[in-house]
Picture: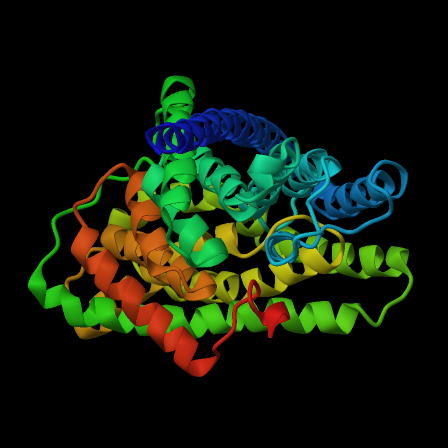
Length: 423
């Protein structure tokens, strides 16, 4: 009896050791992928964007060139299969037989990179998430033991990828739970905890700078009602973003010829970039520029019109990017729109209602509110944005506004681009 008990304990210990080791491997590989993609994209996006600013014709040429390269790669290297984003992960986790193939790592890495540097108005977050999920999926196929923990190991890759991009293990862990798994278990906490710890350690030594260098200011109670208003507005805008993506996908699916999709989509994206360069790529360059100017901006007709048009056009240009073959999702667009929306809201309140709110704080809160409402993940948005700026001063108002924005969005329209295909 004692011998049998000892054998069982040893067996559990072996399983535990193997899971820890394999989770650490997934965390390292996903962090390597995420950091590499982030650095390369930032470098070449800056170069290409500068060239486009100097030669305006490149705004017209870059999108069609980028989408054409992606189509060529799909036809020649990636088995003529389109990337489906988060939907691919759901298909894998909900089926014992379906797995994310190894080529999805390369496919999403290259397509995400090409999309953004050539002006596609999405971001590399979803590309990183799916590529990291593919790492977890491939690894779990190596041994029968790991197949029992398929979802946990896929989530470990996803959590590590988010950790690498934003330097936030909590955001990575919570995103994997809120959006993908939706189930807590000891095996989930073990695999994902080990993976994000390794990913965070790797990222800390490679790049420990926050995504946005923003100095937020102490908040005051009198601003809370206005923050709640911002949360409600963000919820409405998140529905607009999600509905745009779903509508354009439905309409463009009727166009059988891929080259027509590329020509139409790229042409419209190019025109938008020419008029509003802020829409180029994931748009973080525009957000960083606005944060530096937010304290000195005066709301003029020109500024108000620019902010409004950028907020309204971003979902359309993002949708056109995706239906033209670009890689990405609503992650980066949500942060982008949220920053512009926060600045517009604060400027209007200060100019017409003498609210005396802080534009920089509203930009940060707007980013979190939009992300929370767009993907229905308030706690992911909370920790991700706090880590993205490297400051927890606004923790409570961000938490409150994230819950308000998600509730508002879900009340108006209960689906996101992630879960719509599952109903």
